[in-house]
Image (cartoon, rainbow, N blue to C red; front, side):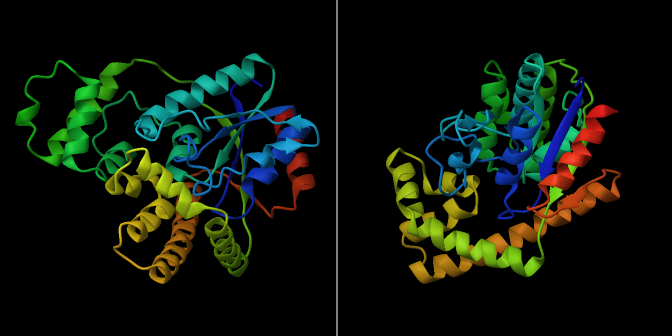
Length: 300
């Protein structure tokens, strides 16, 4: 199993978790989540954790990087990559098979395309990620990385803050991660079926307490602005709870935004393929075909 990994990726709402649990059960595996939001506690419905799916009969499939951070904690590509390798090494040490599962393309790419985060690259995906934050948030992040930084007031532009953070993160560790050899299984469905699943799932989440979940986050001190960083569900429900939009607008805008998000996910995966990453595309019911591919991969 040295340096080997099974990656299960795909757009939202296609059933990646259920599929991954089925094959992990067959191959004595454990699952590492590649989801930028499921790391947070108290965010179950909006992130689609569906932890009940990690059971097959009486057996529970062990998962990693889920429910490990408070909503106030910082989580980013840099943090994910290090947490991934810690989990990966833990799984390997138990002679189990590691499965990376999720739909956050940037995080998946960082592992299977071997991003070198210790290198200072101002045009890296991390730069793009940091550019989504406001200057105040970037200053706080830089101070956390370099508490003794005295000239932070001189960093009066977003570009300079981002550069300073990237340098600080590169300097923080000289860890060199091993290159991962990954068998990549892409789970997908016809576009119309994905659209139907997204809409039905959203209706179910709203019925099952999504709005109440966001209210609880607000009660815990999470600002409406911070909700924007937790994804579409939290952003639009936050807008509804703040009175910025009515319920019908919230539902319609959120539903449309999730559909666009699924298309962007597929665009990212197609980009990975153009860059040389091989993805074996399967339907959610194709567990037997996945089993054959994994057997051949592990035997080589």
